Length: 104
Image (tube, rainbow, N blue to C red; front, top):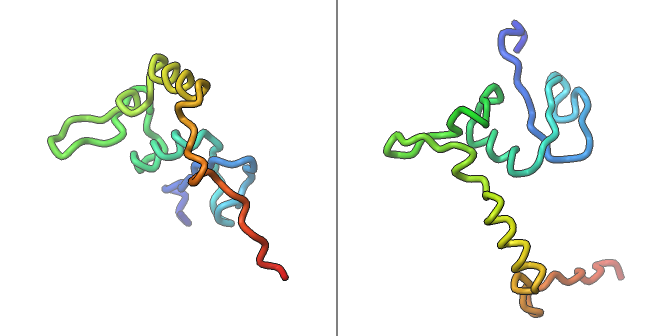
C-alpha cells in the first residue's frame, strides 16, 4: 500500500461513505446493495466486471456468474406475490419481539 501499487477498497452497505471510514489509510469505499457487497466478497476482487466476469468457479471449474445467483423478474414477482398474500409471514411464536429492558 505504501508504494501505491496496490489500492485496497471497501464495499459498504451503509449510509455513510467518506475517506477513512473503514480504515484511516483506505481511501476507496463504495456504497452498494447488500447482495452486491456479497458478490464482490465472493469474487475477492474489486476490479471484476460483475456483468461479464465470473464471480467464482465451482469445484468442477464451471464459472459462476452473478446472473446465476441473482433472482430473475419472475422469481421476484412470485416472492412479492407470496409476501403480499401473507404466505411469507412468520408464525406468531417466532416473530420479532422487543427485548425486555435490562435497566431496573
